[in-house]
Image: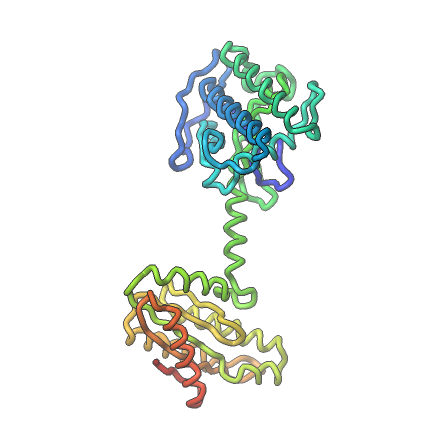
Length: 365
C-alpha cells in the first residue's frame, strides 16, 4: 500500500473487485455496472472506466504543464477522483468537495511512485513520468479488455493478492481504503490503483477547524468564533437576537491575591456555569480577559432577561476553594439580527452600567 508523507492525501487509481457483498457508496456516488473478466473477480468495466479517467486526467495535467499553468485547473474531466467503498464498488467523488486540486493530487501521486523496470524514477522530470504512466495505463487497459488479468488472490505473481479492505491510521481511526489488485500493478509496473485515505484527513481537518474556534483555557468559543457568528447573524434579517455581555467582578483581585492559576480556575468555573445556564443551541464566547458574550437567537426581551438573571445566580455566587465567592455582572440588549453588531455595543454599554451601579447585577439596555 502506498501512502503519502502526509498520511492522508490522495493516491489516485483504484481497481475494484466484485464478489464482495455490496456496501453503501458515498452519498451521490455513481456505481459502474459490473462486467467480470472470466475467473478474475475484477470488475473490468469499472476498472477500465477508472483508467479512462486517469488517462484523461494525466493528459490534461500534461497539457497544463506544457502551457505553464499546472495547478491552476480544478474543473473538467480531471475533477473526478476514483475511489471505492469497502465492498470494492467503484465510485467517483468531486475533488472540489474534498478541497483538493486535481492537478496537485496527480503531481503528488506521480512524485511518490517509482518506475521499477522502466528507468523512470520518482525524481525524474514530470514529463517523463507522465509519458511512461500514459503508456502503462493504455497497455493495462488493453490487457484488461483482452481478459489478460490475474485472478484476485491468485499466487501469480507472489505477494500480488488483493490489498486489505481497511487499515488503521496513525490516530487509530479506520480510513476508507480501496481494494487493490496488486498482481496487475506488479506485472505491469503501472501507475495504477491503490489507496484513497480520505476520512482521517476530513476528520482531522474538522477537528483543527473546531480547535481554531475554541478558547484554549475555558473551551468556549473564542473571539474569532464570535466574529464569524456576528458576520453570519445579519442574514437572519429581522428575527430577534439578544446579546448578553458578562464580566467577572473584581477579577484582577483574584489574580493579585491568589495568583494567575487561581484566576484561571475562576475563568473555567464561570465558563462552565454559563454553558449550563443557557439554552441548548446557544453559544458562549470568551470575549476577552474576564468578559464573556452570549448570543441568543429567537428570544423575547423578557426571555433574554430571565436567562441573564439565571447566569448571574449560577455563574456568580460560586465558592472557589481558597479564593472566596465569585460574582458576575451582566449587560443585556435586544434587537433584530441584521443589527447584531449595534446590539452588542449596547449590551456592552449596559454591562458598564451594571458595574458602575455596584456589580453583581443584570442591567438591560
